[in-house]
Length: 269
Image (tube, rainbow, N blue to C red; front, top):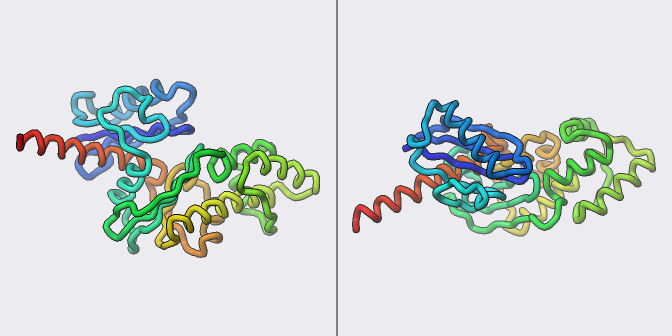
């Protein structure tokens, strides 16, 4: 069976074409101002790259920030479920994953997973930019840096500076003060990453701190954030190769599973 998963995020849109147990195509593009058009365009591109026609895909599942805006999906999967399903399906480690950390552009999610891969508890930060990728972008702009430059500079820091992680607005004011005080951009960048990691550590504690940790989402591509998380958690953090598209993979898997259940029920009626 061929299924598709579309993760319409606030910053990027991801699409995965799944054939049986293998990812055939995965793509990531900026979401932009028109999430529905972006989703349609990237889906068509994925079909072309997989040499498929629309009729070849049995089910399309959507997830993410704009999952109900896309308009052409068959099944909607919640972000929490899609993320956990994607990790269970695609991530292979020596240790069983018990905590999933998903840092996106506008929200951060932490999920506690039992030994069977079921969600025990979760915590979500979606009311403020603090603790998200957007937090680093905002502070990077204050420093005259790009997101990537901010992350790379943070790795060069050798000094710990405390920063407010509870409010993005306060943190921006702090950056201005730190610059005026003569602190280096590298140390300020590191402080921003430590602030996010500290906030995520609090979320992890709320759901029950338990390794092993799997870090996914766009934030997992940031090596400075990975380093800060490991320092705050006191534990190594596993970043899978498909970290940014795992929710899309989970949507494709979840959509397929739900379709199969519907088919089975209809065949028994």
